[in-house]
Amino acid sequence: MAECVRWTDDADDVIKGDLTAAAAYCTPAGGVVVTAVAPCGIGDQDAGVLGFTTSLGFGKKLERIVADPHVALAFHTREHGFSASPAFVLAQGMASVDLRPSRARLEALTPQAERYVGKVVRGPVWDRLLREYYGERVFVDITVRRVAVWPDLGASGAMAVTGAAWPGLADQQPPPGNGTGPRIDVAKVAGRIATLPHRVLAYRGADGFPVIVPVQIAGHDQAGLRLVVPAGLLPAGGRRAGLLTHAYRPQLVGLSTRICTGWLEVSPAGAVYAPHTSKGFVAPPSKDLLLVLNGLLAKFGLWQARRHGTAEQLQRLAAGRAAGTAG
Image (spheres, rainbow, N blue to C red):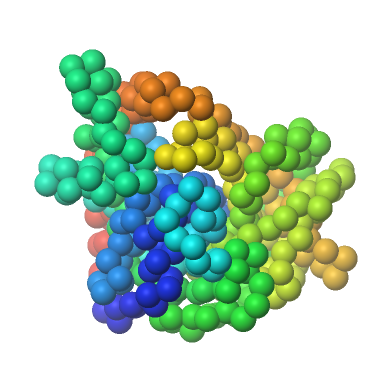
């Protein structure tokens, strides 16, 4: 069993203070998807465990995490949070999914989450609308293997590592058979993310864990988005990578997100990201409207998950992976 990683108190202040984090997981093709989550301070510094909650309605994400549990969380923005630290914190570890959390675990999360996303609303109508949103969550628990901390949110300066040593830069990946260039309109993607201030890029590191780094976008052309990243954080050559850009208000009201997958090419001339897919959403800038939307989406997602037997499929996948690991 790997040794428990106890991160520093300064890192814990960031982890427990940030309203949102970037969560990255690997794809079967060797790529990485990075999305925004609200960890709500879930974590135990002494036990070396972090986590977040999600819904069975996001079955593809859970399937990939179960199939390859190498994941990462990047605490990359202090906006509307509770920490004054300027540090960029990256935690990498092995995930397990609690598909059927106990009622006690779900109820214990409620007062903790209220600090970050506001009071739970009650009443006959709200209780019925939000039953699935509040009560049908799954937990992604991450046994931390490494925590890397940079002194500022731009990830410049010297990196300090707790846990497993930093593995160095990954080798380049073979290009996909259908080409590395953009597969969607680059100008349209650039326009959609222009007003989203928080931006991170994620790729599969040398030891299989996703690496998440902050990026700036310096422009675009027919080859893709031109990225600016601190020196030494991106491996040379080409590879699959994920891009997350987002904006949000207090308690995640008015959330706007754009998630891309694509091909990253790093050369002496700079870093170019060719987007292959792009999806996003904009939440209403009203707490009540946001709750209505969340409630309806949770109901629909859970209905789909039950219709397709998502929980049972994930349990079979987890059992198969456990048997393969034991063998």
